[in-house]
Length: 363
Image 1: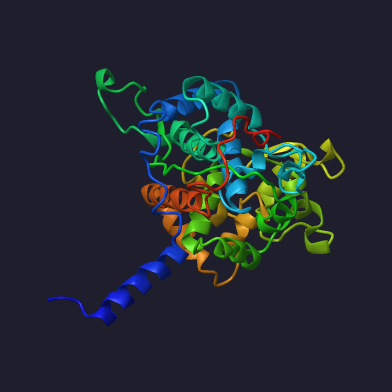
Image 2: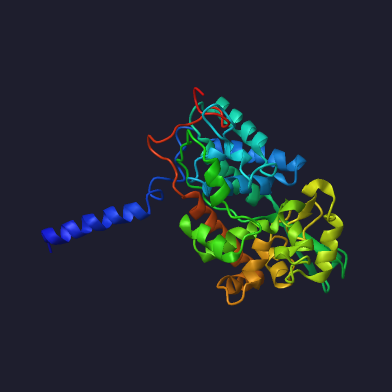
């Protein structure tokens, strides 16, 4: 049956309105470089793998760069720009100053891609690809007891703790972003969630970029690997909310161990603690222990612990779910990373493809 003219105009209006709310998803796609730079993913993954061999923190640092980039004017690689006469770098904003790292790895990736396919792959897409590589290449450990198995079938001795190794979650990265020609230092100071913020404020910041409660909890699960500087959580140890005492939601044993790592007047606030206290000494595993830590009041950052300790919060049920089901966490994390990567990208003729991720072309 033919559509009436009124139905036709309703359909056009619906498509137009939908495009306003979902402008990026249709424009990004996984095969964007299949003809122009078919080895892009392989090159990125290879350099990330090399970097992780010498710096076990780098995977978490690269994911953090992507996160901090996307929350400021969208995923446009503005965080990578250095200071210039026209640029006030986001690197000097409070959430990034002396803590954002991984820029040299991005430089190496960009140089390799420029040798292979000059002027094709954007710095914004490099951050998205490097984040996926960082997570999928990281170790995940499953610990269990063997009750009994013949030794010829068992690499571990009977009744010994055995450790198996596999990768973290993986996802198909959507591509086609272009790079900004400006930075937004003021926006970085206000838009990026702070480790000492309350859950309500952080939820509002996620909502402002189109991310929901499940995205908030899943993406916070990236704190299953990496480290944090003492200055980002030391007030929880000694003077929480001006009380002169510790945060009451901190497990007492965990508090004592953190005070040893971060003495009240020591390290200048730049000492390091694993975001996941159950992790290996190098903080290099990716699993769902982060959520179990929250249940036992061992969340390192205030923003972490509030996901579980804020009374009646919707996040509590999600924390419990992810704690009991690592596969569910991995699936949600992958989906939320794709969703985050779709925050207001520059596409088409907007922006540019920087030849050097630290400066605009001709700058």
